[in-house]
Image (tube, rainbow, N blue to C red; front, side, top):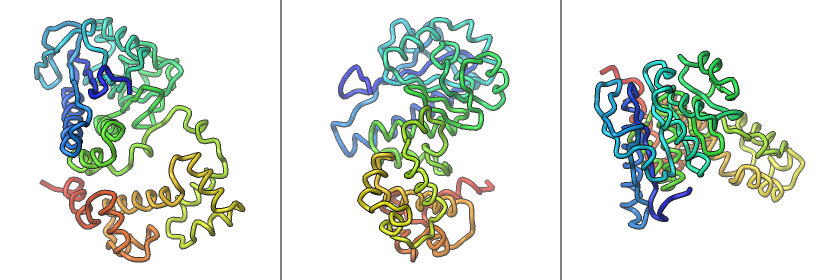
Length: 335
């Protein structure tokens, strides 16, 4: 992270007419929640410096007819660590011509190591700046074909809700934008703060950030084919009772070599990876099935419900029963 102050995180939110106000208010409220949680637990945690910027200082009229007042023009704005580019309800092409300074600023800031986060059709502002050329991107499904015609040099990935490339994130929807914000909170304030925000804002998120995104160079940065095979085996054998020693023997390597190569390829130990897979599968089943918690524990490779409950409490600070109740309240409420 490149910050103007060692204990500040500078965030800029671009404003323009016809934008969705939620694609600005949601990131701010989530980031503030992450900051508040972090500061409660560590008085030396980084503080947020948030600025609304635009082409001029005139108020911006959003899709909801809410007027937003820029704090500064892009020419005078402080150099941010992160820039959020909001989504639009309308065709973005007419607006692109009205905001040439914003587009140039996005390019300038990216070349000065700022991270860009585009939401929905707001990704077009990033594409217009040229920095997305030869990089993956995604956008709102309604604008996919037009985006392909307007920006043929961008590697559009419409089947992904999130793309990540160097210091550029693209989100196809507001829900995907929320996932990126949780990811940024995790990077900035740690796992506990990220889980706190996710529990309070986005209980219905059913896949972790890493499973939803298209990461440029993902294959190249993990070239160990044997570890890839072992990862696939783990994903498809959650209920296996084999120990890691037996898994290593099945793939004709020593347990020590398995641990060393697995951590070098993925950043975590094989036991931690297998446990994360089981937790994610249990979360999916709790949200989408009527299986008992005991049955779910068996299906994801635990011998009893108590082990699953301990993992949930340790990782999510909730019991499986409480997790299901909270997720169902949002997913299936008829009110």
